[in-house]
Length: 181
Image (cartoon, rainbow, N blue to C red; front, side, top):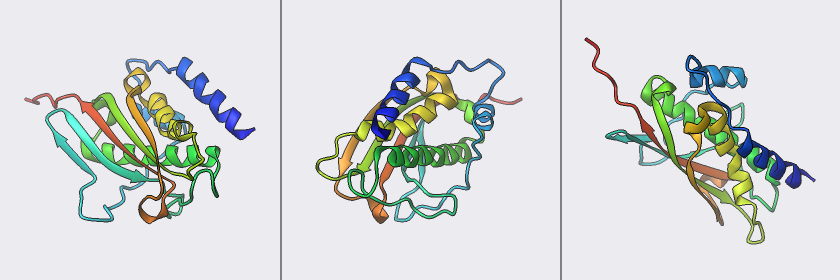
């Protein structure tokens, strides 16, 4: 039942892309959604969380954490269902936005979300990877409207770092900073 509900919600999200008013910022949309961006977690290995080259920002893989900051672990098709995976992917998306905001200062500099790569820890029989990663994709469209629609891959893995159920990375195009005179 939950799987069918998630699939229906994902289809409805495709046809209900929010239109952002000119005066409405991504931060306004986050507030309207009741989302407060968490603090940015430090990298857990020898890498940085974000790299910018030109107008492209590359965000390293982000793992979902719960309200207490603990990693959300599990395996889809095993001890987790699609709805739980969807929620974890949404939380990973929120973490990506927190890192992006810390890097840019303001999310209204986002010109376009270019690409999302979602990794799902799953059993060999699990086939709903896309429905899980929709948790992040739906969030990006809710926050950025049409600019949040992106190219994407959702793939299954036998395991992910720290036993995470999902890990998501993202590429974003940003507006240049205008000279302030």
